[in-house]
Image (cartoon, rainbow, N blue to C red; front, side, top):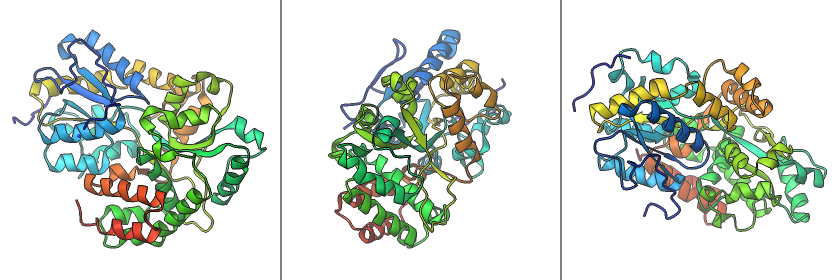
Length: 435
């Protein structure tokens, strides 16, 4: 395809797994001459890995060197690299506030500057997912993997043991806590050491109680928005769940990057697990028999009595995204565009995602989903994501980086009881002017 006019001109944790795809891949930083990309371990790692391997074999002149990092380590490493003008050519992200900060700092390039017809890159995607890569009407980032709504996974064996059904309401969830505890089973798995898994509880509760308008006001930096009654009530409900023993003992010492939280579910130690759909490929890789034997259940987040939010609303990540570094050379950017056009989401890429239990954010793939080994799960995720009245981006990505850091710190203190719901709201209100 023809290329258009272009501009001339995040301690990395010791648990970071850095896996190079080619002999030329280095772990110290992106190559100064060759196109490069950084991505995450776990989740859709194998799909992305396979895609670049195939691309590099078929396109040696546009080969892209790829390094993989654990989630928490990556977020720190990419901030540092972007700030130093040393980012990889293809920057892996979540869209939202982080993307906006990159755009404001002129660190990423709008796709319209790289191709003559941006529709050749954008028209295949579901609009609700594509929109997360848009800033001020311009597309800066494209989805690069499966849609990632947050689901309530559950262990069917453990529910059968106490003769229970998955909770449809918050009251039903709370009623299950003492029943599982009485059997020596943790009601809920949680990787609290990583902080961000706690956020999904707040996001869903605020939405179920007050609807998406509550977070819209927060994201718009409206003064006092964090003190909305829905946020305070959500905080009170979180404290009630923690104090009832809802989460596995020692949850604050469990790191999500290690997969120890998910392992509690498939080793019959925890009954439920609130996590994004990126957990499914990891569970399938670590415990395939658990899935094949039909022990893994999944459902939507419970409703809240008298809540104003639509029960069909979801939170999570519409997908992850590739943006192209403005500090990359023209040759590196050309290679990135070529990969995004012809390498990403080709037939092999889509088949690999589906085979690994991820749902591509593409239009019209219902027939391909029906031909997979687990069409029920994949169709559930596809319908959930594509039909949701509101698909809210994870708040730690939707907000500015400074507010997101404050949110995770204050939320951890809410979970541990160091802050009351009122103190949490006040602390977050004090960040409202941060950009």
